[in-house]
Image (tube, rainbow over all chains, first blue to last red; front, side, top):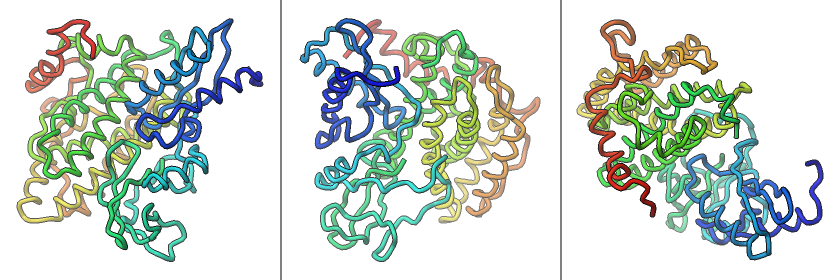
Length: 175
Length: 241
């Protein structure tokens, strides 16, 4: 299907309005995981959903929520299809999504500069003022923050600490 | 997703079983890891692997049936991934060996256009984190106290004989095993060198080494691991949350 119809656009808007089950401040559209909605017949639609991480356990909750919203809108049959290509990247999170994450206390991912596989070099674990692209504390805005753990409450986040206000915070790590 | 008719079943099972079995082993650390951050890290890595396993096993058939209802001899995972966690150094050595291999493998698959390319393109980024995690711990333990150094050296040596199996050909897996093996040796050797550890001696393949997991022959601890992994599903067939 080359162009989406007006109805598909409307349903895509609806499916995208579902809040993320783990980070309810942002919607699936802002997270960039709802790829498309295709009408497959009378009262039947297919939604393309891409996972952030292959093992993201929230995908099932997302699928159920999407089905519920579209059922409530009068669509009888909803199929949520998991798509892996093109692979999701944190660059797919919208500017509005990034703003909401920061407001929620999660440092948003920085823009990725290089494409391709993630570098295997150990990056610096601390960022400071004057750096071109530091990880800023979502609470006080300081650039002086350090990594506590590359893994945090969910697969997509790392745990950091602000060295100015001393608060720990989650950082949505670049992928 | 790719249609079942074009999926190389042997390869999907081999890679899926590697991910599933290592995921279960790492999950055994929950509640036992040395620090909270490490518990979370190992559980996160296990979750990534479980996600990969679900995609791969679903390509080969019904994921639940394959995970919970196969006998030991039907599993096609490497013997390396089924090795018990041992002390923390053993877990890290196993992670270093396996994640370095998996990263090379997925990078190569992601660059191609085969049935594993979509998964590999995602998973290669995840495994980069796993490898980075293993590397950091290898450096910290190897270049750490005398006791840590000694344990890390012992762990690297104990698992060395399981590493040759990773590069044997798998039906339907379109990768250059020899090239991957030399890249793996260079990469692991470089990390061990920086960690002041010596690259273990001894064969990695041949008559006196391990490595027939891909043919369904497994080491003794695997049966007990499977019993634990499968018993709930087998005791309560069809149960759901």
